[in-house]
Image (cartoon, rainbow, N blue to C red; front, side, top):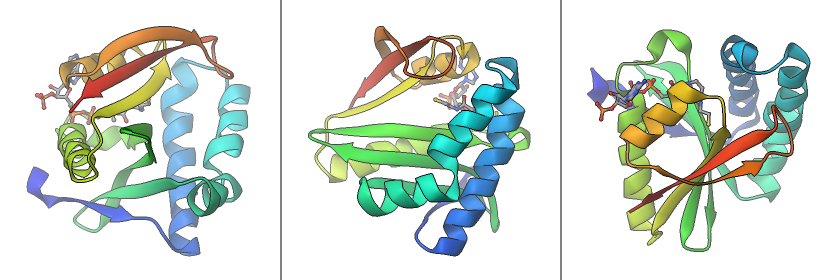
Length: 164
Ligand SMILES: CC(C)(COP(=O)(O)OP(=O)(O)OC[C@H]1O[C@@H](n2cnc3c(N)ncnc32)[C@H](O)[C@@H]1OP(=O)(O)O)[C@@H](O)C(=O)NCCC(=O)NCCS
């Protein structure tokens, strides 16, 4: 089952359009219990619209991957390589596919990428109140380094790191 998960790098305009659609669906479904509809709309437009994604991929060094199972995109992740470290910028799985081990598999894939690129740390920020997700990251070996004021959203975000 988990072996069926593959990671497809997003490159074409058509793929970016499909990514923006998937992001819109997942963000609206998931964040509604954490932040307001207006904040979701603002954040999707700022970070996950076709325009924003194209800019990130073309000019800001971001890489996006569909998580694809049997031909269906069930989630996606966005990463950015920095000096000695890998930022896991976005990590979203569609509701009906959560809890099946796909995130664990994806994190293994990120560890492989990091080792291959000789990067020693994977890091990310997550909304301070996104408890279920923080629990997943902690289970997978990430540790909270600090809590900081986020520029958007509900005030605070945690910065977590995993040493490779
Ligand atoms: C966060 C997210 C990507 C994780 O994906 P998932 O499919 O739920 O995770 P998995 O089923 O692969 O589980 C990952 C691991 O966490 C563990 N886990 C899951 N829920 C847990 C919980 N509440 N407490 C502790 N561990 C938990 C699993 O047992 C598994 O560990 P294992 O493989 O070592 O046994 C997914 O839930 C998601 O898209 N959430 C909504 C969006 C979001 O918050 N994204 C991140 C923004 S920073």
